[in-house]
Length: 125
Image 1 (cartoon, rainbow, N blue to C red):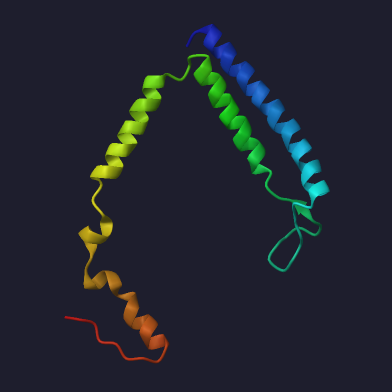
Image 2 (image 1 turned 135 degrees about the vertical axis):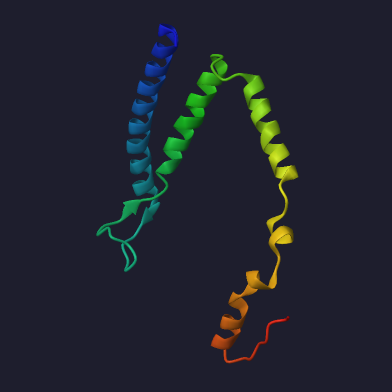
């Protein structure tokens, strides 16, 4: 790895850290002001309202960093196209699991569910 590439990585990582920290603080203030909070109830551990949706800041910073890396030439267009093509080929050539493994044993939970309701069920032979 070249020194310039390493400096790009360090600078982008530092910028992402700062943007995430500042963005989280700003989003927290916005969420409290707009009432985007999770109120305490019997299922939660917090004792006061907590802002919800803070992960959106991380997602935006991540996509921004990826865009910067792509624009700077560190992510090749060919890599994106190749990855998309490989994913598409896997999705097209993957056998449907239900067709491949469809057997009476696969539905062994049905008799217990029916019995729990009080009905009788005899599995097909």
